[in-house]
Amino acid sequence: IREALDMQTGRLTLGCVPTVASSVLPSILSAYQRDFPGIAITLRELSATDLVQAVIRQDVEFGIGPAVPWAGDVAFQPIATDPIWALVPVRDLADGATAISFAALSRLPLLMYAPSAALRAQLEGEFAARGLRADIRCETLHAGTLVALARAGLGVAILPKVSLPARPGRNLRAVPIVEPRFERSLGLVKLRGQSLSPAASRLANMIAAQIGQGTDQLS
Image 1 (cartoon, rainbow, N blue to C red):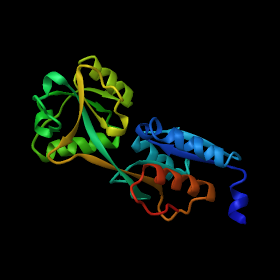
Image 2 (image 1 turned 180 degrees about the horizontal axis):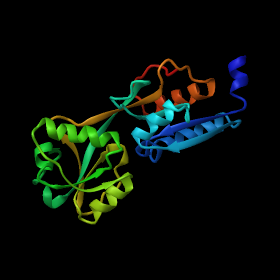
Image 3 (image 1 turned 60 degrees about the vertical axis):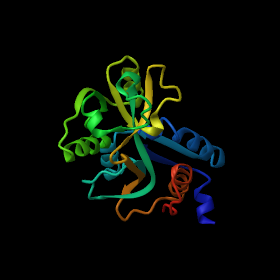
Image 4 (image 1 turned 90 degrees about the horizontal axis):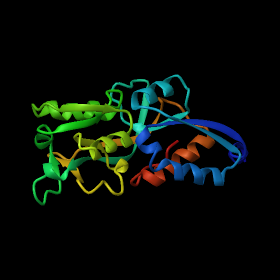
C-alpha cells in the first residue's frame, strides 16, 4: 500500500549520458509518464565523469551510463553491453570489409569524444595496449557532431552503435571495431549502499527491461 501511494505523486531526478539520453531513453520516459502521471521527472544529460559527480553530490537519485573505474563511492550495476563502431569513409575500407581493427584505425584521422567521456579513456587504453597511437583530429561532446564531421570527410567517427545514424551517407560505412571486439558496459549508477525510492526503482527497472539483456531487478 505504501509503495502504491508513493507512486501517485512525487519527483525524481536522474542523470544519463548523451548517447543513451538521445536514443532509447525518450520512449522509456514517455511510457513511464503515461503509467505514473503524478511523478515529475527531471532529466540531466551529463558526461560520464559529471554523472558520477552528480550521483556523489546526490544531485540525481541515480544515473544511466558506462562504468567509470575510479568511482569508489559509486556502485555500478551492469544492464547492457554497448558495441562501439566506426563510421568510416568508404575509400578507407578494403573492398568487402565488414569490420575494422585498431591497427587500421591508427592509420586514419579519428574523430572522438572529448576526454570527459568514459569511452575516450577506454579507447585510448586499447590503442596503448597494442603499442599504437591514435591520430585524433577532432574532439566533441555529442554523437551528432561526430557524425556531421565524418559526413564532411574529416575523418573516422568512433561512437556507440546505439548512436549510429540510420542512414550514414553515401560515402560512409558503419562497421564494428574488432581485434578484439570493442564494447562498453552500460548500467545503473548510484551511491554505494543506497536504496532507491519506489518511483526511481520502477523507472530503473523499466530502463533495464528496455536496454538490458536478461538483467536482474534493479533496486
